[in-house]
Amino acid sequence: MLSNIHASVKDSLESFGHKHTHLMAAFCLYGAYTVGSTALNWSWRFFKTFLRPGKNLFKRYHGGYIVITGGTDGLGLGYAREFAAKGFNLVLIARNPVKLASVKVELTREHEGIDVKVIEFDFNKPYTAEGYKPLKEELDKIEDISVLINNVGTLDTGNFNDLSINIINSMIQVNCIPQIVLTKYLLPRLLQRSKEQKKRTAILNISSASNYIRLAGSSIYASTKSFNKTFSDVIGKEYGKYIDVMAVIPGPTVSNLVSDNAPLVIQPEVHARWVLSDLGYNTETFGHYKHWMFTNIFGLPLLGTQFAKMRKSFVKSQNKN
Ligand SMILES: NC(=O)c1ccc[n+]([C@@H]2O[C@H](COP(=O)([O-])OP(=O)(O)OC[C@H]3O[C@@H](n4cnc5c(N)ncnc54)[C@H](OP(=O)(O)O)[C@@H]3O)[C@@H](O)[C@H]2O)c1
Image (cartoon, rainbow, N blue to C red; front, top):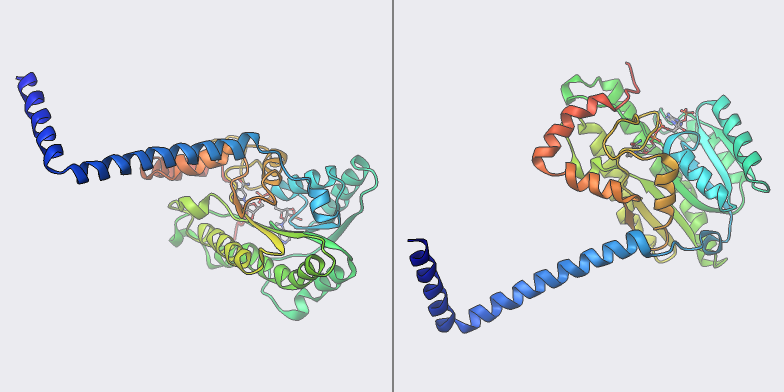
């Protein structure tokens, strides 16, 4: 019975092939193209993830100051440590003066010769020229800024109806406004440094895997992270000739927002190291390969639903009001 079916399918295919030789050739070509391009794509991904050496960033950006919003904890501190280890000077902006002072002491003790400046500023407020004046004045005093890292962000999860207007407002404020204001302040200087002094500059915009996987319970957070990513992509198109603009798409990273029992979680320094190895090459990076895996695995509809249920166990709530 089975052999009869097999023979009849074979006959039909052969007679189809004889009658439609052009169509068969097109099918074969399309198949070869799909297999070839997938193989190339995976080889390229493998090469750039595991084999391609990072650029010499100190040489590429001619040293200078790295401005990091939210540079005293989590991912921001990871970037601060990695850039400090490469010999860059730092400007760290955050709220807590005690943490700012202790991070400054730690970094200057561990990396002799670098200068660490700290600016105390709370981004959880609407933009007004007057309100942001102290920050602008401090930034204006700093000569030779080479890299801006728009990192500061906050996270609260819950179905939309369960999020208070205060929490929503806070997430939009902290995750979106500083990125725009800091870029507005510093972009002219970064452009000038790059064009006139021939010293290349960079802007890193920290988005999130939530930009792609958009789970239930993350309506506002994921929207703000899409904002970060979209803004990054567009200014990259406008100024990429002079400034390395890169959107960063982290998955779970141990911090004040995410605990160490999250799936595929990594430490902030590891995250930063992998991101910096892509800087100067890419306009977007997941950083560590685990975060690429995270986005692809939990981006699948079924697993995404499971993840949405798990998230409460490792996301640390920030706002209580
Ligand atoms: N952790 C993750 O798994 C993960 C994954 C994807 C994307 N991200 C993104 O990575 C970025 C950093 O997150 P994180 O997890 O590293 O957060 P974190 O551990 O909470 O660190 C936040 C940093 O920002 C500062 N900060 C927070 N609110 C501030 C405010 N209103 N004004 C000024 N500074 C403020 C904090 O300093 P103070 O203590 O002084 O306030 C701290 O230095 C965010 O944009 C987040 O969306 C994180």
